[in-house]
Image 1 (tube, rainbow, N blue to C red):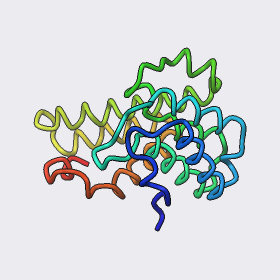
Image 2 (tube, one colour; image 1 turned 180 degrees about the vertical axis):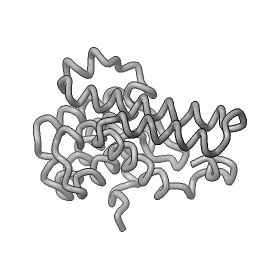
Image 3 (cartoon, rainbow, N blue to C red; image 1 turned 135 degrees about the horizontal axis):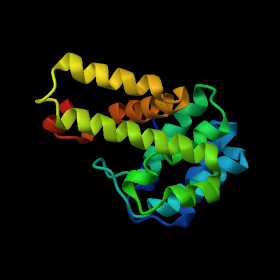
Image 4 (cartoon, rainbow, N blue to C red; image 1 turned 30 degrees about the vertical axis):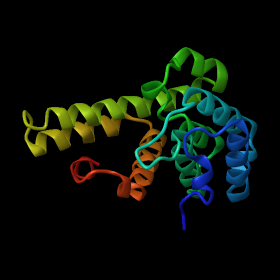
Length: 178
């Protein structure tokens, strides 16, 4: 299975040792997780999303690692994998852009900010879909994607791919939104 092999270890309520085991398991699956920047991004993500749980009962950190692994398997570099680990940080935690820049550097922070903007645009498009025609909504998305760093789009696609792999935990209404 392409899903993280130790999912049951990472249900809510697990400790720093579970996070260390998750990082070790990711390192076994791809060497980019040995990189200092990726390890630092993992630590920042673990702290930022501590206690956060997804609808399937797995931790948000598990989702972030799976997103990072998808990016690693595609052959993307450590900066993109780090951005994948942090892609939800600005929207779903108290972490700020300034803190990201200090901890993982400007380039990774800019990628994360780009993913956050894409998420906001997607939500705005869904919320206003009844006001925009399908063609107008798609044109807006296409324009914004064209303006984005391609790596940002790839991070967002890896996030969506992992979300699709875990649809089973969602209600039918929520599945149709994803």
